Amino acid sequence: MSHTLPKNFLWGGAVAAHQLEGAWDVAGKGVSIADIMTVGSATQPRQITDGVLPGKYYPNHKAIDFYDRYKDDVKLFAEMGFKCFRTSIAWTRIFPNGDEEEPNEAGLQFYDDLFDECLKYGIEPVVTLSHFEMPFHLVKEYGGWRNRKLIDFFMRFAEVCFHRYRNKVKYWMTFNEINNQTNYENAFSLMTNSGIMPRPGEDAQKAMYQAAHYELVASAKAVELGHTINKDFQIGNMIAMCPIYPLTPQPEDMMAAERAMETRYWFADVQCNGQYPNWLEAFQDAHHYDLDITDEDLEQLKRGTVDYIGFSYYMSFATKAGQDTTEYEFNENTDLVKNPYVQASEWGWQVDPVGLRYAMNWMNDRYHLPQFIVENGLGARDEVTADGRIHDAYRVDYLRKHIEQMKAAVEIDGVQLLGYTPWGCIDLVSAGTGQMEKRYGFIYVDENDQGEGTLQRSKKDSFYWFKQVIATNGEDL
Ligand code: BG6
Image (cartoon, rainbow, N blue to C red; front, side):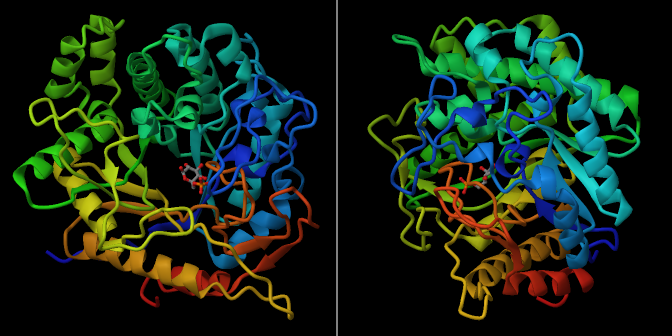
């Protein structure tokens, strides 16, 4: 059987509300967890402050002012030929604190207008409900996703969005990169996924497993509910896919890599297969975690399996066995090693196009579901030349090599793929570092890491290249 990219393949671009909209306190919007993160760098982590403090610079407050400029930006996406545009709905525009009974109409109207603008050009919105931007109030008052009440607050938000946009949005995702929190020792991952700042003496790993469970129940409930609101909805999960290789063919390294993959991707097992994997149940029992996981929850997980797997792919990882060759517990903070066969970006991300094909095959064998590459790209510094052009051949090279592997996965390996939306199609605030100068876009935005600049948009060389890729449905790379 031969496969090619389907005619209706969803080429487009991806962003998240908090990384480009700005207007952080406009039209009733509440403070989100993205609003309390300062700017960092490749070597300096972002600070997570206890609220918005005077004298600190918070890059998401202004971002690239997409809130006021979205019409011009969507027009540029249309010029590139986008078939779809992935964004998220800022929870705090709809429920400013997260625990209100009634939504904020001005926030709902903004997304009506944005989706209408996309649809005007035949661009299909692809929407993530929760993308690293939960209300800060839910962190302060409820302890974030440690608290079962968050399921109800999230469902209120999901229901309002599903109803309101039921005739405008077909493709949804529940939680962005829900599996980043595997790295529970990383403050950014725990906060962005679950709104958790570990308390003194708290077992962060246990807190993560409890929070993740509530999120998975909420995700399953949302999938089930969404299908009752519009049976044509396609509701996916969203995982950060970084396949983990064994450093050597030594059997112990292979086993360590296997456990590392299980540890990083069990979230997808639950969302796609509707149940916890055996190794994890054994692991949680062995740790006497005694989590709040009810029989009703387990039934809910079965009823809310996803329609497709949304995933990001930027890089691969490698690991090797440590002292423990019985339990093989994987700690993402300490157990990753450098892969000598691949180059890393300035930010240490290991560039590996073949890893994308490998990951797509791995997921296909395990989950048997359509896939959607909803993020891929190279964060790099761009230079504006004297004539105002941006010659980003390195970005084209990265994307071309990944698209080649993506096509091989579809055409040779038979993976069913819905679409491809490179990350940060317009330059935006980096989630990990808060920088503007870690750029992914086809469209350059004149703004630096301190928020200085005209915000003027210009087309990079990659803009014209990607336009041609879309026009030829991926034939002309
Ligand atoms: C993913 C996120 O982790 O990668 C995005 O879903 C993020 O929000 C993207 O921006 C790239 O990461 P970074 O740290 O370079 O912005």
